Length: 624
Image (cartoon, rainbow, N blue to C red; front, side, top):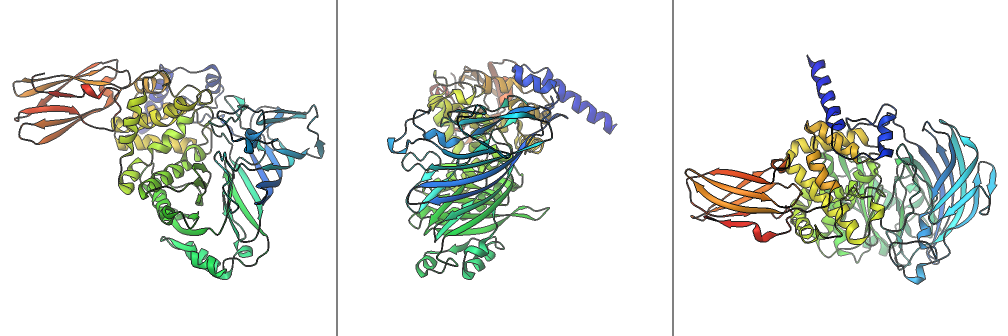
């Protein structure tokens, strides 16, 4: 009987997907037809993903704001295809004069691009003018003399240098002579996947990255007295730091309370480093979608160790590196530790997947695997919001491998929604409320487009509304509709199926359908595929004997929960909540029969976390 029940569930899940009214593009359907993806939302039996191994050396010159680097890259073809070229991304070409960008740059940061001094394929040295090299904007392709067979590997070597931006510090840059965040800095092999083949989309500023899961072994050379933090784990602290500093690092690695590894007093006494010579830091990371690093001189350093998996006992080393003048950062290591505990045990209740996390005090707010670049904030609340948002990206897009270029909402929407409970508890503010207020003023305008529109085709208000705010609201309203338990079970199932791979939108939709046990296309279509907005109206309130009839009209096309605040004549109040599923099947008129022995004074659509473009029709009095 158990086997039959399981088969029925699997069959139902496949029927939901195959009978779904969601549009499936031809290139995506081919992936299902070839067996790399399946209609139950899981990777298909023929799913594959390629990878690379990077061995790099980089020298940072703080005075010239320049990096000089070499890389040996091994690429492994796990696909069933024979490849006739390898495509690389050169992100720093964003700053090359004449290249396309989504926004203007300060003229002082525009330069001649990445200087590719040496390029080798195997033992062959290639010249930029060679017919085997094609270079366009931020993309470089190397044509292979013989096709790369499935299961084989190819080796490449690059020697390059590039100037770091000083003013237009887009996600990274030189912030001063003593503060640097270096990202998007090396020739990176593009993703070759089962839907599009090579990712040839140019990096023009708005949309971010799409990466395979690679191994990194990196030597980073900096002048004396610079601390370096990076993706992965340091391999040679004993070569760098004094015995006193090493004891503090060891203490932090065993403590669930924050330890000050480098304090202002340590810097003053000059007892942080082992010597005054130039330093070479060695970092290594496995199965990581990217590698970034930061360097700071006279930076403070706090850290602790966080238990992330109570079953295996696995921990993560969590740290903050910051300028002494950044008052908010004195709390950031603690905020980061609390954030990681929340994600590991509450929502999504999936153990933090990496061995470390560094919050570096640079500028703005930008995520990279195991390290984020955060500017200073004006309050503890803001520090909680920024820190937790950027750490949330560890799951999306890094652990999950989503394509930010095409579907930024699969990344940014989660980074906004996942930490909301933590932000409300720790930061003492309601992010769902602020998001709903903002989106209510924006949705339904001509720049409000469905999130399913490819992100690299969007700009400014359209990009942020679709990728951040609308997706955030959609996830939260779905949670209120399915209930936290079912919602989180579906989210965990999605993460379990697709971590370390490349999920596309339908993989997400179909997985939730499977766990919820229903075809949720009634929800997916309006929120993710259609133009539209949210607008509920309280149409009438009438007493009908022993109950009140409350009529709610759905004017907008986006289904939202019906959350009422009922105020009685005696001054007391009561809440009534209905899931967004009341609008399933095209329903536009919903009647609530509310039984009470009290006299109702007013009814309000009370929850500010639910977007609504017209608040004027959200309250009604008895007899109307």
